[in-house]
Image (cartoon, rainbow, N blue to C red; front, side, top):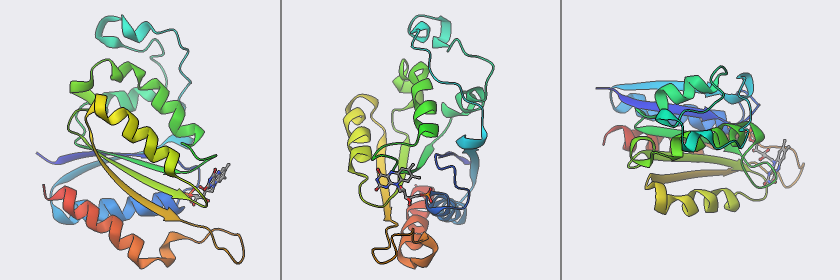
Length: 188
Ligand SMILES: Cc1cc2nc3c(=O)[nH]c(=O)nc-3n(C[C@H](O)[C@H](O)[C@H](O)COP(=O)(O)O)c2cc1C
């Protein structure tokens, strides 16, 4: 059975820092064995926000009432994923709106941690200029309940001189770190 991996791309910038690190992680995975990778570019998907109706807490199969948007693509593969990559630039110190919207809709999955979270490898790829710690704190806070395994790669894109972003492709060490984590998780 191939190792099933889903990559949630939270950045609207295709080919940006988090995308690039995710690509190198996936390259490491592929180089270590049979892997099935599904990429979700959240900015290009139509995912509507959670309505807060809490129907998923009582509905049959804990289904979300919104059943006709692109979140269905994620619902249909999340349960079988061995690895979930959360590729996310820090926006106001937290998840991007695109990723947070998808996460809120995962409330429907949170009703069944054994199926959707326990023992999965979560890989948070966090790019930032000044801070990412609150994103790590979020994952660590929910880890006790959801019992996923947690891996983090961070990259600071701040160019102190110009205040423009450095691209991660200028840091071979970071690309290698992402690649090596892919190799490690791929050879479990
Ligand atoms: C709307 C917006 C908000 C941001 N907020 C923060 C922030 O609060 N803290 C921080 O360290 N970087 C912040 N950044 C910088 C990005 O996290 C950083 O440029 C990152 O490397 C972009 O990654 P990407 O290329 O994958 O999109 C923000 C960028 C944008 C566009």
